[in-house]
Image (cartoon, rainbow, N blue to C red):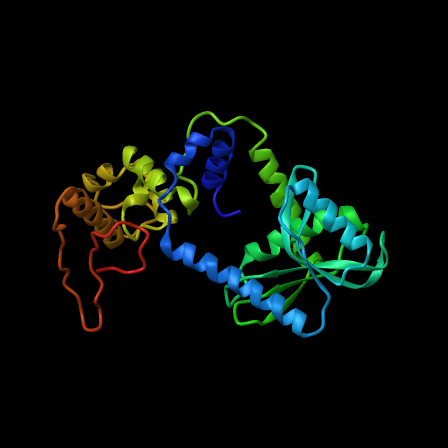
Length: 300
C-alpha cells in the first residue's frame, strides 16, 4: 500500500535471508515507539479486565498451535481473546483482540469483531486495511463478516469503523499485491516509483545515487520530476547543467531554481561545509535554496 519497493525487498528477504544485511540500522526512536505500543496494548487489556471482561491471553506458540487455541476459545464463547491467530489462503496473522458480540455465526448466537490498539492519536488509512485483512480471515472461520471494527488510539479513544466502507478497497489492494508478487523478482527492485522505502531507505538512497535520479534534488515534487523527464531531463547532473531557459508546464523561476538547487547539491558532495546561495527576497519572504538532501519540508 505504501511502497512497492519495500514490499519487494521484504519478499527478497524471505527468499534469501542474507538480504537482511542490506536493511537500515535499527532506529532507536522506532524501537522506543514499538515498546510504547506494547505498553498501550497491555494497558488496554488491563482496562478490559477492570471492566469485568473475561479476557483470554493466548500464549505465543507455533501458528498452528495458536490457531487451534484461538478456534477452541471462539467455539467456547470466550468474551475477549488477545493475540489470537487467524489465517486464510496465503495470509495469516495475530490479532490484538477478538471481541465477542451478539449475532448469528457458525458458533451460535454470537460472533467476533476485530479490535486493534494503535499508538497514534489519529486514524491512518492502513489501520483499516490491516483490520480488513484480519476480518477476511475471521469471516472464513465464523461464517459471517462483522459489521464493524474498532481501533483504540493512543489517547484511549475507541473508533468504530464500518467494515463495508473499506472492504472493497482492501480486496482490490490485496489482488494488486498478489499480482505484484506472482512473478519472481529479478535482482533488486527499482526505488524510483515508490514514495517511501520502509526499512530499506539507505539501500534505496544508494541506488538512486548510482543512477543520479532527480528525486535526490531537495524540495522537488514528484510531479515536477515527471515534468522534467518529459522535457528530456532525467538525471540530477542533466538538470544542473541544462542550458534550457524554460520547459513546458513549469514556470521559468521554478525551473531556474531547480537547476540551481541541483548544482549546489552536486558541488557540495564530499565537502564538510556545503555550498549555499542567499537569494534576494522581499519582506516576509525567507525562502532560499537548500543543500539538505530530500525529503525536507523546509527551504533554508
